[in-house]
Length: 163
Image 1 (cartoon, rainbow, N blue to C red):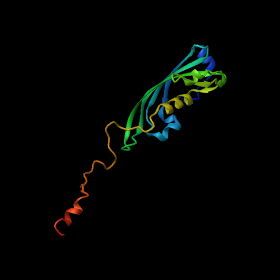
Image 2 (cartoon, rainbow, N blue to C red):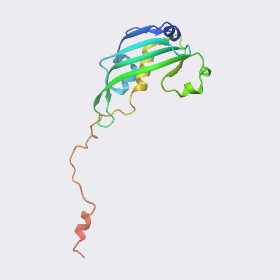
Image 3 (tube, one colour):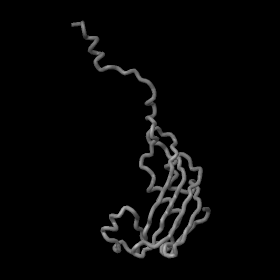
Image 4 (spheres, rainbow, N blue to C red):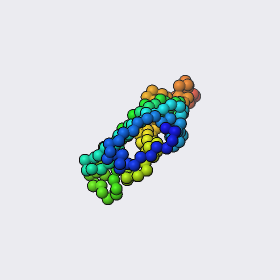
């Protein structure tokens, strides 16, 4: 996506519109500091709809592979990204009940007449990433080197028999 793509969150949902495409990983500026390599593409799909209370909704799906830095060994780790988010748009935060606020199955956002699709996708990716990505079976740097283990009682062995 080379040009900025903007949608109206209300009309996109009420019309049941659909949008899909590819984003280059390198185009996601806020994500670059977390990556070891910015090559590749991410596939996205946005499907509009209407929620049970007549509110506009978007289902955002993003898939691909990101090269994150393992926080244990500091080597690259290929992280399989599979994001699926349900976003419901409201006119005012006061419209939400306590039950809706506690519902983790969807997120509520204010209606946006000019919603930047790339920014929305990048937001959802950042929220989905692990805080400290790690390989399942790696070790700390330098931990594989053999070290001579010294017993704390070896000093006492020298005193044995001197008394």
